[in-house]
Length: 242
Picture 1 (cartoon, rainbow, N blue to C red):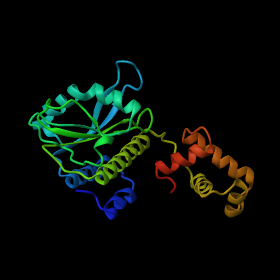
Picture 2: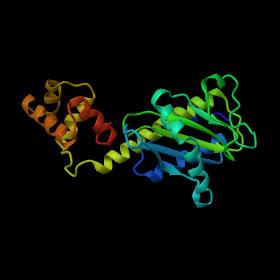
Picture 3: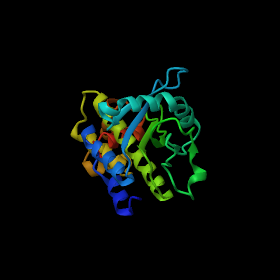
Picture 4: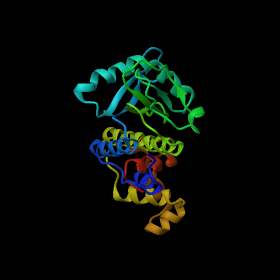
């Protein structure tokens, strides 16, 4: 069952979450569209340190009853998943020990990497996500069987990346320094983000160019950014500007 265009657009336009409680319903909705049984969003911890990387569940709906199965999945396929995300963004899939196929999308089969089957009592489809050192991981859906179109697979992969970006933004918001941006700093950043140069910002706000550059400089330092462009991007992620 594919997500229709309007539903996918709604996910991507969704207001930035203010907490993880806003993200869980989106994952549950994706699960429902796929008619899957469970989902789990993994983040890879340990960076690139040999032997230190591991899959950490950021959010899942397995519950205590099925937590053993979640641990089994990590033990069985964890190393393969960690290696795969370093070299490929193609989805991974495996078939359960009862030989029921999870993915039946003939036109997409060549673009799926099959993991060893007949190992776990459930089938799975894992979307690799690679967004940088702290944003690598997987969105996994499990079920007995599922018939998917290639469009559905691509759409859910895109949505999974969006959710990981939202999780990163929430983490960044929690760890950002307590020093807040002033109204002038926000105004200068917003206009800079709109493509205005310092002279145009100064004219728009009735300030001198020197003062505008000072505001942008102080905002850049408060956001722990290396330059104005990175400060604008970080301010957008944190919801200070749009």
